[in-house]
Amino acid sequence: MTDIFSIISGIMSGLLGAMGMGGGGILIICLTVFNNIPQQLAQGINLIFFIPIAILSVIIYSFKRLIVWKTAIPFAIFGIIGSIIGVYISYNISPVWLGRIFGILLLFMGIKELFSRNKEPKH
Image 1 (cartoon, rainbow, N blue to C red):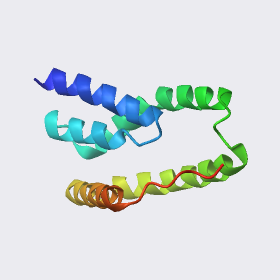
Image 2 (image 1 turned 60 degrees about the vertical axis):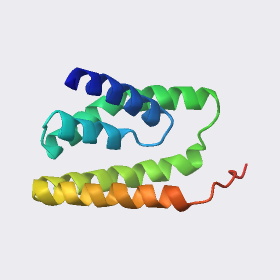
Image 3 (image 1 turned 180 degrees about the vertical axis):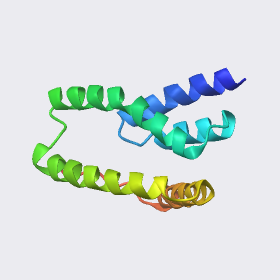
C-alpha cells in the first residue's frame, strides 16, 4: 500500500511542481505520514526531487516565452537568501514545531485558495 501512495504522490507532486503550484506539500506529507520519514529528512528529499523538475520546467517555459526574466531574477536571488535562512531555521528547530508550522502554513494556504477569487492575469 505504501508503494501505491509513493507512486501517486510522486506523480501528483511532479505535476503540481511543473505547473508551479508547489507539489512539495504533497510529497512531504506522503513521506512523513505514509513512510514515517522525519520531516527534516523529507524536506531534503523533496528538494532533490524538484531539481530535475525545476530545470525541465524552466527550459520548457523559456521556449514558450512564459518567463519574464526581469521579474524572475530578483525573486530567484531573494529566494536563495530565504532558502539559506530557512535551512538554518529548520535545522535548529524542534521537529515537532517544524511539523506544526508546516501544517499551519498549509492550512492558511488552503483557506486562502478556497476563498480567493480567480482573477485573469494581466498581460
